[in-house]
Amino acid sequence: MDATPGRIVGGDPSDQGEWPYYTLINGCGGSLIAPRVILTAAHCKPQKDINKKVIIGPTKRKDLDNGPFQMAEKRRIKKAIPHPNYKKKTLANDYALILLDKEYIIESTIKLVLNEDPNFPPAAGEVLDVLGMGTLSSGGDVADVLMDVKVESFSNSQCNSYFGGNPMKDSMICAGLEEGGKDSCQGDSGGPLVKVIGNTHTQVGISSWGYGCADEKSPGVYSRVSEEINWMKKVICDEWNVEFYLCGQTPPTPPAPTPAPIMSPTPPTPLSFEKLGKGYPRDSKGKFNKNNWDTKNHCVDFTACQDKCKAQDQCVGIAWASTPKVADDTGCRAQSLPRCVVYYGVTAQTVAVEEASGDPKEFRAYRYGAPVDPTVCADSESFKWKGVTKKNCTWVANQKENENNNVCKKWAKKTGIKKVKDFCKKTCGKC
Ligand code: ARG
Image 1: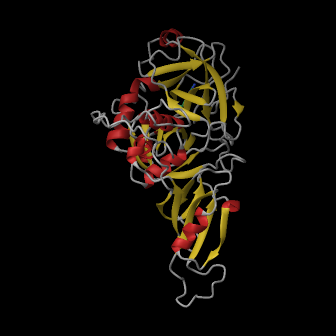
Image 2: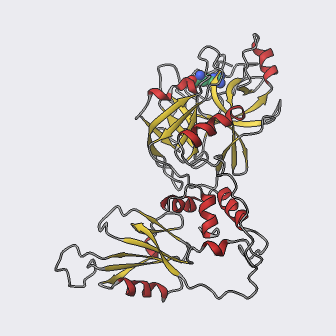
Image 3: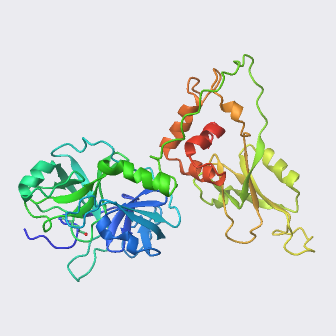
């Protein structure tokens, strides 16, 4: 079979929302491995594309719409670093990292993690998926939809014996079919090679090179992700200092002196309004949900606004605007200020805040919830989480970190705490 040069060979068009982290870069692919970080191949030379746009999450090349799934979005390349030991000649260490101008938070149950296990995938036969939007033929059209193809892992020695001349380095892994017919190809470089298990996609490789495409006994070659996790951590955590689930926690704090056990049940703490900042309350998914708003409370003061919320057990937050747009606006009509918007979490249990984009911009949002009291989170015999008594604070915080909870992340960011873990320790996992 003659491989069509320049596209994923033998693959299928992917479904919307299937690969939410796939990223389209100028002539290459990539994967969003942290809210502001793309992993790609060094030979794609992203450092030459500073300020150029990438598209995160596309299913189609020319359309950001993903139907019921999160829209694809454009971001700009702010910084890019190829691996310091990348060798142009041999393509050893064909890894590069891109820092985006702005984060993109994936709203999906599908989670991309990096493979840290040097013994995975096994020598032979693990089924993996490669993603790409390579061009259709040299000088011709580009694939207009994201393609994925299932290939099998091979050992490096097997590939060396196919190829001859030992081109396989430790930083590489190869995958394909012995009989050929399925492969990545030009234009797919930088894109991810993943192992899908349920909703967890483990990235094991980055499309790098091959002799031809999809030929028999000639698997595609990928950069081996597990080999350079430490380099990635160094760049993302230490140099760029941005959020990444693999950034180690700050060194464990020495155990605090054990507080005296609280023997008597503590009275329930009254709820309070926590200042979230300037903006509109959103639901826990960060979405504006029109039906959850009560906007008719114009011309009320802040206390009255809070009372409206307190009187409703579904209220999870308010937004209050104080300064009248027009000095003599005392008519108390809808749109008059001061104005109170009460947010009901009928479906969404919590409220987040997002910067007001429309008019008026002067809303201040408050979350109505339990006060953040660090002592509440002190591990004690009475500490409960989701009704379970024995879990301690750190456990809860770790749980939240692992859930990859986007709302948590946004809140943590707003409060200036970098890690969801640390934030959750403060809020006792309430985010
Ligand atoms: N070097 C190619 C690119 O820049 C990827 C080639 C992959 N080849 C293969 N047979 N798997 O897009």
